Length: 111
Length: 114
Image (tube, rainbow over all chains, first blue to last red; front, side, top):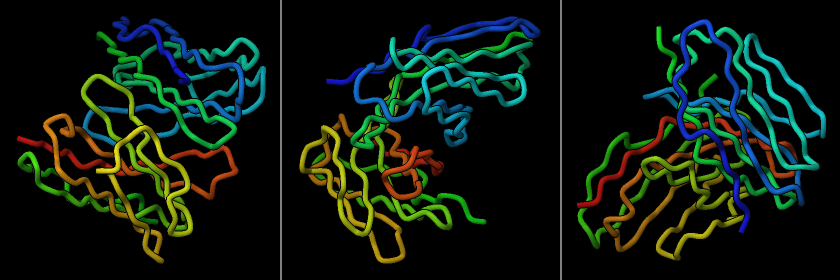
């Protein structure tokens, strides 16, 4: 059974602070690693799709890194803003093209 | 450019009944995946349809079945509903299997089984 673990489960961060959280996934049969952002009452939205070991992707104040050999990815948010409050989900795409999801990290930004 | 749409938005059913949920993919997408999300958990993969066939299936019983139509829209059917089937059901569309698989999600259908 393949497991994707995310930590922490939830996180309270002061507005303006930077933060990061982790996604751990199997280091075998890797095809891609996805990060999604899910705001309350909206649909999950793709942030990054990462395929290469050592990949680093950036979108505004949000960036992600990937280590496929040890099976982890970090998501960083610089200078958190209230609109960053959401649940951040990662998903591991295996070589059979099946997407396996973590339970998410719920991020709450305190003004 | 229409995104992924799902219907209905909310649904209340009784144990033992059957339910059909519907999904239209994003324009240009031909692959549809269905997910179940229980409270506090990440989405659980149910199955994926491509070229009107079920291509992959997650660990769900045969009570969960689906269909894809020639216009790429899809249905999820659940028979003999159990209380534990209460969840948010998400549909996602993507380009054909074989690529990085970025998913575009619909708003979901909230199913409550009483």
